[in-house]
Length: 123
Image (cartoon, rainbow, N blue to C red; front, top):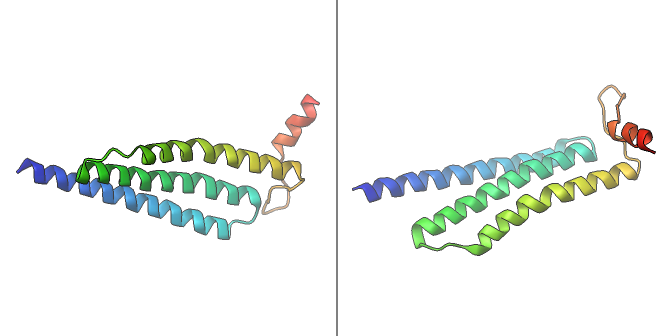
């Protein structure tokens, strides 16, 4: 009797993780299409997509472990790889965009560039 209750709880948890991940992946896709400049698009694609992919992979890991008693090292490495590389790559792309002279978008046209101000002080 308790086995079926635990299996149901695990199934519901996996479904919640998959829906959560799908929501964030969809919002990342919409953000990349709708946001006005490279920095906000980068923010949407990095933060939401990283959370979405990690949630889907954690859900897949839990499903495989609960249903088939498989501990997937590839999924664990994939989760770690995504969580470590996505923020670093986003930082490097943002820095390259700033170095190329791309200014952040502002609705009123007045932007404050704290990174450039800090670079001016240290140079």
